Image (cartoon, rainbow, N blue to C red; front, side, top):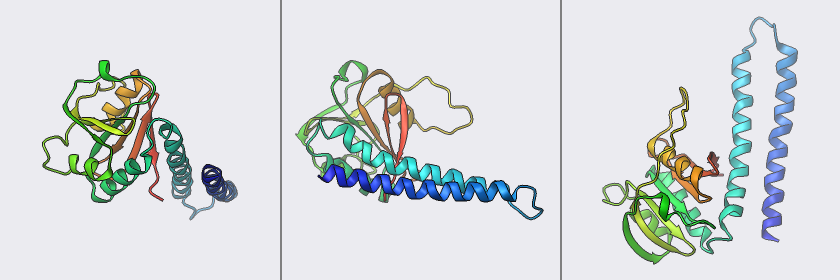
Length: 202
């Protein structure tokens, strides 16, 4: 029932923004050529609405992708939101069906129950473990400061940081879901099957 309600909310949110996009697109089409009309401004606003749709859908599907692999999904969600608010950069691997040991350079073993407080403490600035990736399997934090393979993919002029390249790199070779919080912007995203998806905080 909860998933059904969540899906309905996401669907309604997407429908609302699509309706706005249709309206704004019609306005753009009818206003092209007007002397004082800012076409680029309108196109930027439409692009922003598409980003909002993707972010909202990502938050719903993020849960769907990992809830079968860890009962403590809410602890992970709470941790990344808190770290996003504080702009504490982080990189979290949620192992799913396929073990990731062969793809990563092992860090420091922790073997502790999964909790938002522990996740946040690992990525607190100055903690010697905060630079690598945290590895979660089921309801346990197995290790921290793990080194992930960086993607060799080229991104053109788009700026892609090391954490994001590492997230994409591991998702290229495994079915793991990798969460990233940007230290510069606080923006949240996750990588799955070689694609990086933004996560909305709303």
